Image 1 (cartoon, rainbow, N blue to C red):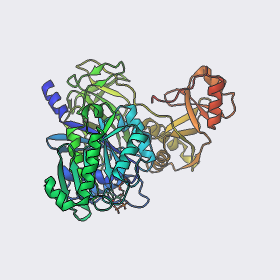
Image 2: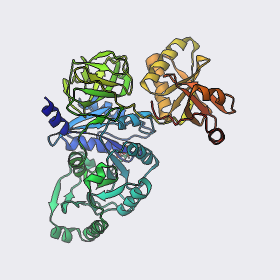
Image 3: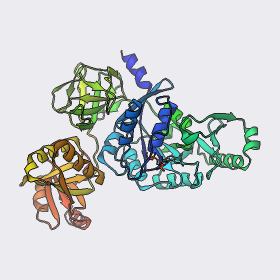
Image 4: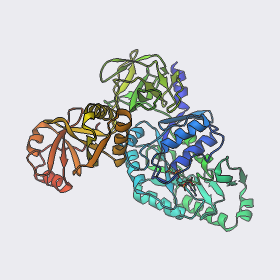
Length: 526
Ligand code: G4P
């Protein structure tokens, strides 16, 4: 049993793709599925003007093709391995969901648009990876069209992100004339042939160096010279520093034309780490072969009109998960029956009968489970995994029902969406439910919130931005003092913690400087 768990865990790779919008995350995801044989032709995912999230594209694809590619977790086999690709939502905007998803993966693929280099969202997402020491594999995308010099992109990675770039593959031909890539680890040059919109796997040919030199001419010379320069600088792939989050293997290519995609997908199997023991709140490892444990990183209700319910997405951390097993929720001490567990999210669900460390299961009817909850099988020792880090909200709004007759539905929706972590609902300790302040990491969260209140709770709302610029966690004693200050408001989170909202950063800085004894914590635990 434990040997089975260990060997199954060793076959798992659980990862996410991070990128600035438009860098090519959706295209690359689709191409991974194409190369893994999970879909037979690519090109169905089209970016549309004004499109907000990839999710709808997946849903659409799912309907038209009858395959399950949805936002939360894609599971597909590749080279005798099971790949779990977790979607980082909040596509056009940043959202708290993204942080949570990154707490459930073991590695990350960072996609850069080679015409744009490091963009603001890439940086922000990378900071989350750094805080978790996640190994990062970098993909220089869109090399099929004019862009920055690849060497310049490496400089940006080093200077702006502080990761040492170690190219695994290097492009031959550039600026609109990409021919293929050299695998610097084997010196094999792979030449690709374009297919229409990259809808099929790109035919490829391994070309020996002497033939490549004569056939590719100056493109070959430039590429090999650059590659030699990189070797001279010691920029070769180094597994130990990659796993430590210090260096990043870099792959070159084009998701659209499929050039270099296979090399990247292989790297997920060959370089990205398999699940390892997860540390509990006391920093004690929960070994992979201990009885089953999992943590909830996402909760979503009413995902699908046909199944109006609440699903908790949990990542298995140890042991074998068998559908039907009763697990204990560490926070409440209550048993949770896993009779309804699924892997597929969207229009159709597929029941999952067993799962192993690294896998994500969707637990249906998950009333009573919250984000960050630990579940464990009673036959072993109890365990509590650390709470999922939540970053301080940066945007604030107020909401009221358009129709005052819908106040009851409004409140119900507010509570549920708060529990799901769609936004944080902050209430005045004295006024209770009246005029709550909504706090989020990104604006998109408000839009999702308004939309769901309207559609799922039949309580359309009017949103207005609230005049706050910073938030800190505080305590009762400090709150009494802070309440007296100009530009400060004290509210309570749903878990009872008090928070101080500041109308401007100056008001915050003044308090921090003049009264350092007051408790003002960056909100890091959800
Ligand atoms: P995202 O999920 O990161 O937001 O990016 P997405 O994959 O949607 O790609 C954004 C745009 O970039 C799309 O173009 C896509 O076709 C294009 N793209 C992705 N990878 C490559 C690449 O390797 N080379 C080139 N040249 N383009 C790439 P679009 O014009 O918005 O839509 P479409 O009509 O072309 O599909």
